[in-house]
Image (cartoon, rainbow, N blue to C red; front, side, top):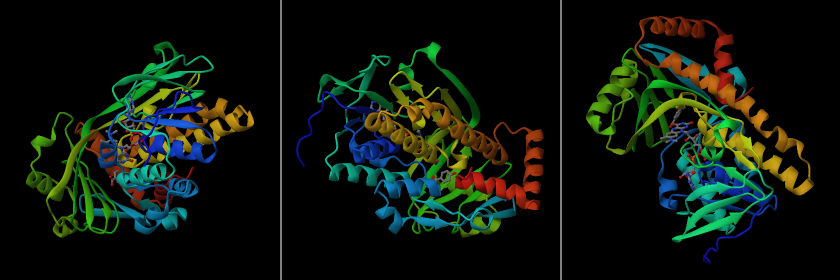
Length: 394
Ligand code: RFL
Ligand code: PHB
């Protein structure tokens, strides 16, 4: 591979090479738009992060259109339904019957690897260990990205900057306080996840509500499982030796499921906080935000990654319309159109979290959960509404 030279001038400078930045770079390159992707972390770090696992049909279609779905087509798992368990009571949601759609289980780690491989194959301007330190002149025709590359302070002049740098990035923080509003809520809980090479306990995902807290049985492949349990906000991974994790998981699952659990050494354990945050608008001058840089949802609805990909599809076509055809309307509408979808997912993730989590342990809330679950069990219309949102239909 030839040594990469950091460009001084591009049409679109992309901050961050998570799924959002990587896919945006690919779609823009495909449209003949010059870009650079600047990522703070190393390639190994980005490829090693264990995060989401469920893709909506629209996300899979988008990845196929971007030419990065060959391995996904071979290795992913097709899930026609999922289960919700309340103690020993179990409800299977048949997505195919309820919506005509299914979801796809394919780890974000694998997707990220595929996206990076596609960039390496086309020798894209993708720079790892190139932290962006500041953004300049966002209101001018040629905003600039200031970054560190091989120990040197560098600047890249752009027509547009895409902030795809996640929740802790610099892009959102570069928008002056008076030019943006942040809407957020916290949930007094976190998700402790454990990845291990044992067969999944069931063929489909099980979202389990229990008086001791939420649990989720998920997977990455027929031989790799991913389990989560709700833990208190202030708990750390070190509070949870593996044996304690397995014991607690088993207690929260229906007995038949718990008895079928195959435990094994953890490949990874981590805690993700639960929160909902939306920063509005998604555009400031020539800076455009996409993905976690602009919004965070709790993982319960499996929406975070799917929303990031949706933003990127919309942003790529808006930038293409402007830069290739001088057509400004899609770019002008980007923020409002993306936010309408974002708020649907924020609402669904918030609702699904409240249906299934213990949170503060409020008894009134627990009774409401029971009532809601009874309604779901009794009403096909209620199941359909849940299924439509889960598979990402609007
Ligand atoms: P990402 O994946 O956070 O990528 C942002 C990238 O920007 C880089 N970066 C910078 N680069 C250069 N200069 C700087 N100054 C930079 N600052 C940051 C970061 O290193 C990173 O590589 O955001 P993106 O691309 O928008 O993708 C969004 C998804 O990753 C995210 O929505 C989901 O993974 C959320 N999420 C989950 N979603 C689910 O649907 N199911 C899950 O189980 C699930 N688990 C998770 C998660 C997110 C987590 N975070 C953010 C810590 C678990 C965790 C722990
Ligand atoms: C996962 O497998 O990591 C996963 C699955 C479903 C969710 C969240 C996370 O809702």
